[in-house]
Image 1: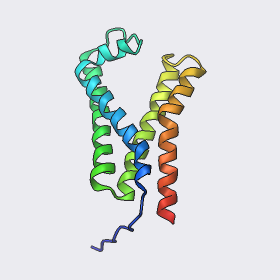
Image 2: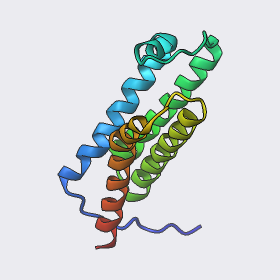
Image 3: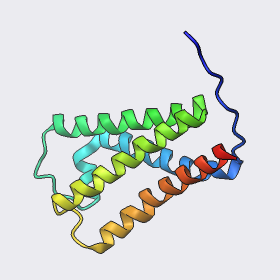
Image 4: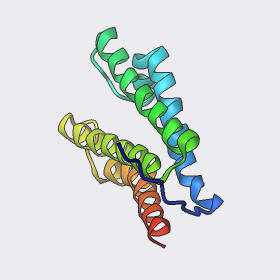
Amino acid sequence: MKTRAVKSVDIPRWWFILPAYLTLWTLLFSIYSYFDGNGMMKAFGIDTGGASDFIMLNSAGRYLALALVMVFGIWVFRTVHSILLALIGRLTMDILDLVVGLQTHVITDSNGIIQSFLMFLLPNLISIYLLIRFYRR
C-alpha cells in the first residue's frame, strides 16, 4: 500500500479567523442544544410544539459531531484536506438548515435568508475559496 505525502501549504494566520468563528459557533450551539434544546429554541423565538427529548438530543448530537469534526479537522490535524472536509461538512449543514427553515416557515422572509447567508454561508464560502487558492499557489 502506497501513501502520498501531503503537500505543505502555507496558510496565513489571519485566514483562521473565519474558521474559528464557525467552530466556536458550532461548539456553543451544540452544547447549548444538548443541555437545553427546547429552551434554546424558545430563546430564539422558535416554537417546537414541545418536541420530544429524543428529537432535541438527536439534533444536538449531530451538531456536536459536526463540532468535533471541525475541531479535529481544522485545529488538530491541520491538513488542507481535513480542513476542507470540516468546512464542507459545516457548509452542508448550513445549507440544510436554511432549506429546512424555509420549508417549516421558521424563516419567513428575506431577512432570515440574508442573516443565514451573512452569518454562516458567506464566511464558510470565503474560507473554502481562500483555502483552495492557498493550496494551488
